[in-house]
Image 1: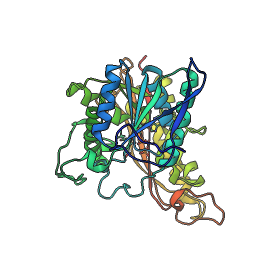
Image 2 (image 1 turned 60 degrees about the horizontal axis):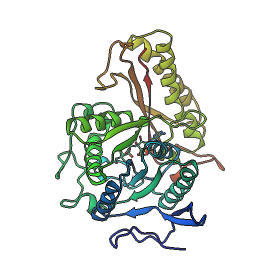
Image 3 (image 1 turned 180 degrees about the vertical axis):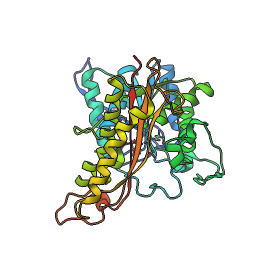
Length: 366
Ligand SMILES: Nc1ncnc2c1ncn2[C@@H]1O[C@H](COP(=O)(O)OP(=O)(O)OP(=O)(O)O)[C@@H](O)[C@H]1O
Ligand SMILES: CC(C)(CO)[C@@H](O)C(=O)[O-]
Ligand code: BAL
């Protein structure tokens, strides 16, 4: 098996193979095709320059790894309208608060590469754009001068997008969007993609990124890809691996609550309190139901927020303007299980890790 590295000596030397085959029209012999892996900025830039001179279009999919179908759908969207796709995999420290789950964030490098390799082979068969490179930078490459700082005062160079970054997720995670905007600015400057791809699941992130691109005149198009869900409706998320069967089942309360509120809007309601009452009814009932159960049967959760907000500013709205639509969103924290049963299907970390779940439904303008 060949080792995998980009054309540069400074790129990662990873012992796994990551290549797919493309067939030469002349010889009909398979030609090994590498997905380049870059760990540093300079070799990626020189490769990017070659692609530019060759007239190739580039789509960038920023991720933190632990890839699932949600990420795959972003890569597919990128491959549908670009000849080359770059996927970044980097668990960015500055978007995690000091007490958040940076250390326990799932890391599945081998499986990530395998998934990308398999997807690239599918894209080849479908005649779509191809996965050209994975950018998995070191922290020194991403934060070249000062080490990344996650404290609120924050020493270093940061991008802040206010007031959008201060509400909803930003209220509970005060450094989150500063970290996201900062790392995305770096990624956009490094890759200089024609288009960048983000998931609807992290709706506030999409609003922050759109605003950043507009305000800083970044020369890229922002594309938003619909939320991929499990068959039961749970929004896919890398953190779902921490949910065992019990917390997964109870965690569905969030998507059900938002769905109930969406139905109220679709039935003609536009008043905030009326719409949100349907969502709160679902979460309150589930909460009460869980509290009556034994510790070995229940999964407790806390609702952080349920919001009805303007699609562009995420400011809360009193009435939905049907011409603008709105964003219904919510966040809950699944608490660790108090007691587990023998043989119970547990998540990674045996369901002792609290898990924050977020979800949203865009209320479409009519
Ligand atoms: N279910 C999903 N459907 C569509 N896009 C998704 C989904 N989940 C994540 N994404 C998008 O993938 C990109 C990378 O996200 P990330 O790597 O943080 O994964 P994640 O599943 O959101 O992880 P977590 O929420 O646990 O941090 C983001 O643009 C995110 O919105
Ligand atoms: C956009 C992102 C990759 C920045 O670290 C991250 O916030 C994510 O995965 O959604
Ligand atoms: N998907 C957003 C990254 C985070 O929650 O940290």
